[in-house]
Image (cartoon, rainbow, N blue to C red; front, side, top):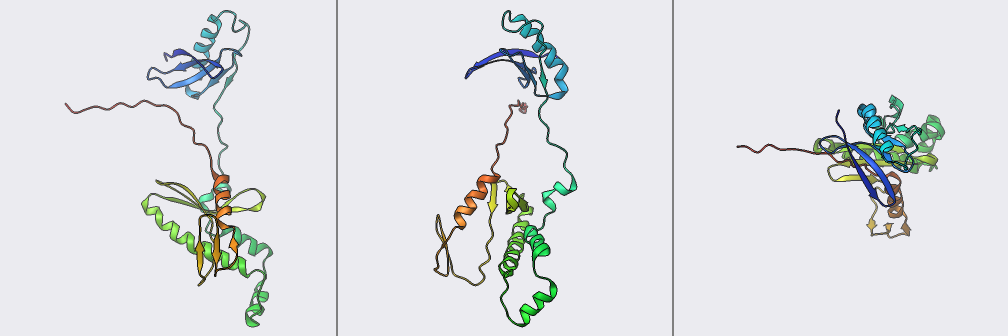
Length: 227
């Protein structure tokens, strides 16, 4: 494989890039340290060979006996069935919480018969709300959207729903206020004209937690025009 080497100096860096004939970078070397980074594993031997030769030709910049270090592109560990977020149904985190710490069957029956409020009632309402919203979001699948439910985060919290599709990525926080008057402002939410609830701030914080950079790599394309 014939690779073309070009030198690049920007922002305090001095590098040699190994490129395919179409211009795609498959590896680069730091002229100062002699370290070599392989961007495409299938070209590893060619990248190391051509960059090592060019580094040695730069007299005085790289010691002749310095062995360049090749670094393969970091790879994500293989996923297991337990890691698959797509299998989580809406409200999975609340369901697990109620199953582990919530009231038993007899306690629930007694509470209903005596019409006695339970401290777990808000959790059950929240579960019902997430299930209803999740069912509506799942219908967007036919339009090219993908929905993840109960996405776990650190400190035993989760994102209720993560909507991914042509319009971007949206984190959705679900609240259950059945037959209530809800007022929504830019930074606050009020239920039945009560005190402002921090729903908007919480939603923004969740969105920041799931934000992630998307790596972008150059590629070339060609088109054939009809004659």
